Amino acid sequence: MTNPQFATVAVLGAGTMGAGIAQVCAQAGSRVVLQDITEEFTKKGLSRIQDFLQKGVEKGKVTEARRNEVLALVSTTVDRAAASRAADLVIEAVPEKLELKNGLFRELAGVVRPDCVLASNTSSLSLAKVFAGVSKPERCIGMHFFNPVPLMALLELVRTDSTSAATIDAVTAYSKQLGKEPIVVKDSPGFASSRLGVCLGLEAIRMVEAGVASAEDIDKAMVLGYGHPMGPLKLTDVVGLDVRLAIADYLTKELDHPGFKAPELMRRMVAEGKLGKKSGQGFYRW
Ligand code: CAA
Image (cartoon, rainbow, N blue to C red):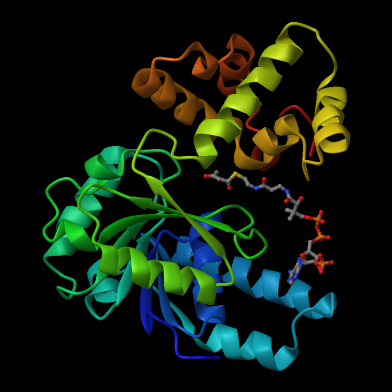
């Protein structure tokens, strides 16, 4: 491993995204502290990393030595301040609630080192609002990862009006060490990826609602006709209907565009607990 741009990284939130982020940072040679609010959550996050690396060993993609080397760089804690105090980079991956994210960064601004870079993994919220009131806003940036984090090549970097060129340069260099291809996007609703991806997913749901074709056939149209690795309805199941509904409502409010209006079918499925892969039922049975 070469010297990582950020030697010590704190990842706050040990869910699917947080665990994946912690894994790729450790793979780049950073010491990583993965934090969540309960030990149950941190243990689950760590097992996700262990399972992914173990599958890699079984597939012949990862050696046992490499698995052990990566795991040795990851520790867990429930203490957010302790995780962040020594960090060169803090990446937040907590639930998509503006108040939660903003409160977290306001709290951390007084704890972290002045040169610590503060990053949010939000997929669509305004970074200006996520970082509102945080001191030294030039060190604040969006680092939007994609699921499954260890396999997806893109890293969407989101700059606010205050993000410094030095912060963008450092995070761009680190993105490459993570094995990702960075793009730099202006802080705007849904950035580049969620704005386009969610729009496609919502239109596909409207087409199911209108009886244009089955979910399977609409997905096939995009997979076989457009070369997408996964159709928009299956992807909505993987991301979670509730997650995409929240983004759709947010983008409708921010962009005033009918393409983002959530279809009734989507609201009904969420109300019935059909959230996609995580609940066992969405447009597909999992
Ligand atoms: N360790 C190491 N390598 C692994 C691995 C593991 N545990 N698991 C898989 N791999 C490797 C495989 O060996 C394979 O490598 P090769 O290409 O060299 O053969 C590669 O990774 C792909 O794996 P698979 O062949 O098992 O899987 P696949 O071809 O079906 O691809 C996928 C899986 C990459 C997830 C693909 O289905 C895909 O791209 N799906 C779309 C995902 C997507 O759109 N994600 C974005 C969601 S939106 C989001 O995340 C944003 C948000 O804010 C919510």
